[in-house]
Length: 333
Image (cartoon, rainbow, N blue to C red; front, side, top):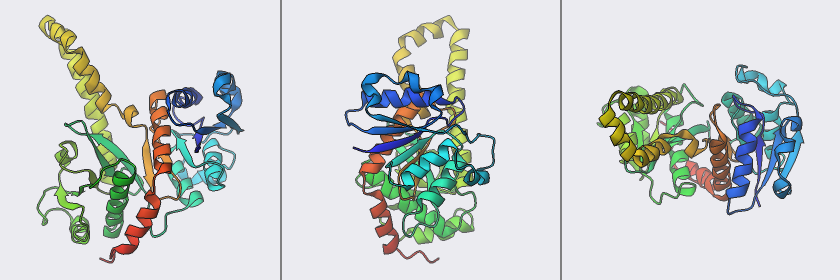
């Protein structure tokens, strides 16, 4: 049985979604697992039902690292819930960590405390984007590394291919490099150099444009964290705006309202497909133990799915494959 350390205090809404999501995960999962809830038990202990208590351990700490604080200060806060949660993984008392707290602090602690997979220069944060065919595209990096060299982007491709294959179950992942055109002459100097390096990979299909992320023409998309984070935030904004525009226009027309009632199931499926909560969180790929970074506004559904994602990550051989693949390629540019 795997043990997942959950930062019970992390996120914009405190303990409630973390505890509710953890309990839901334990209730719904077909696989048995244990959880260590790290935080102030006075805020959540009474919510744990007796029938699930045997799967839950509480590690008490009352300090919470705030979302507004600088990530560089987290190493001084050794009694904070996120520090203790990652420390449990470092010490081997937990197999993975899930946190909706400060993403920069989580990433920094995981990299420094848990350590990087052999050969990995920079771990990357990945996220799943929905496609028009109902599938998913893995995009990385989406925020861990804003300034990258070609060798970093090349390694992101290796990390992404391994995650798609070992965790997502894609037998032959197609890897694309995000650029401003499909031709190999397009892009800036960094992406052009990266393109030449990526030609070593059988999985590499060439440059891809922004629209390719959503049309199922590729399984993994590589970019630096600056571009990736803008892409992520823009996509979230578009999804939210589409939902609001649909609602606004439905209210304006009785005929549209009738159609909306008939299309209720379709709208429900659309909302589910574009909801980040359905994907749980963003894995930090390239560190020695599974680390799932959740959105600060995560609800209990997102926390539940993040825990499931952490278990799938822990069950895989991804880190062994990453180390082996990095060693097998020529990374000098």
